[in-house]
Length: 256
Image 1 (cartoon, helix red, strand yellow):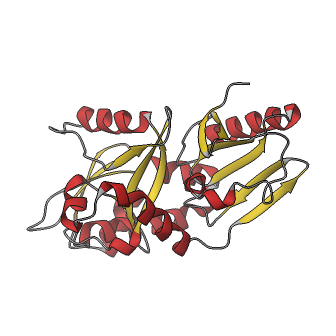
Image 2 (cartoon, rainbow, N blue to C red; image 1 turned 180 degrees about the vertical axis):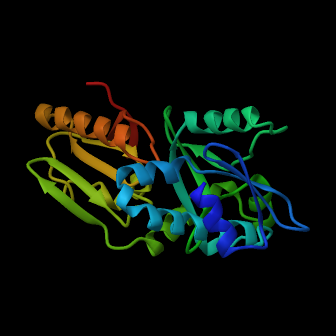
């Protein structure tokens, strides 16, 4: 596997074992083993095979940072919120069970609504590490203050948020990693910022795509559904094809 060879070349101190397709076991003398899944890397490659070398280099750099970082220390200023489909939690643990894990992964998360959760992670230059309850306990940070802190941190690391589109159908972009997390920033979702018909409707088919229209815009909703399905089917870091409506300051599932 090309990824394994690239990792061995860059970091010869690691032992890299190919467990199966898109799964590696990486160990370093004196350290615990890490299991790495390459599903998202493969999805990124499929989107543009010409970028294969860049995709491999990016994921190798991310992996090395993961294996060499001191995970006992969390930088409170780099804690960010990440939106996931609620089924991701069970799917992740099911995948771990199928691969022989003896206990489920522990994540720190809050429910956003019946379909989505907010996970908390530490953002670093090349990687995103999901936090565990012990990480939060070590910070002496109450759960009540966690979401506010994470949202403020997110504002600080995001590039300029840009609005694309017209005629009531828009896309928000913010660097490619945290578009879905923009749902948590209340200041974005005003009528002054988004000229849509009715209440705001959003789709977040992948982590880097945030589409917007209005609840009274039938044509916009139809286009939004089609774009969400296409992006979900073809993209990497998939979230959900469902639509969500913002009412009373909250996003909930939308059924037209």
